[in-house]
Length: 190
Image 1 (cartoon, one colour):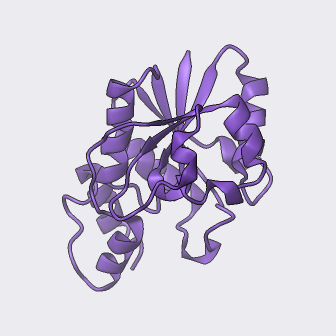
Image 2 (cartoon, rainbow, N blue to C red; image 1 turned 45 degrees about the horizontal axis):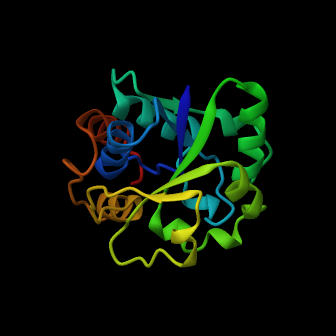
């Protein structure tokens, strides 16, 4: 099975994440998209993160009953901070029959050369990139392992959603309804 790995803090997951997941499932060769909730991205501060299992729960709520998209907590049991190469190595050993590829935004591609062992990732894995507004894709966009997948561009970010909650603005329609209800009833990000 071909699995597209969509890594993220998903802090919180929003409609942009879900549109990209669905789009990659429909318009690329992946059989499933695994939304990998990262407990600690080495390029982000941990203090602003909601609890790992809360974010995983929100992703599960957002996915609903879609059989093509799965929430993954695979990085929860791996050393922190989470490095993509380590997770890929672990997944390859655990699921030798699957073929893994990465799904990432163009903002990540332009800084990909800063990732731990990025050369190994480029050698061994395909990377499916969706563009993000106002980001240059950088030199790697022409690499043979990189494919640019035209996808809907929404300028929505988790940080904007968190700021909106803190300032008392509604996030309804920026996140799936089930996620909105859970965040609201549990007073997350206030």
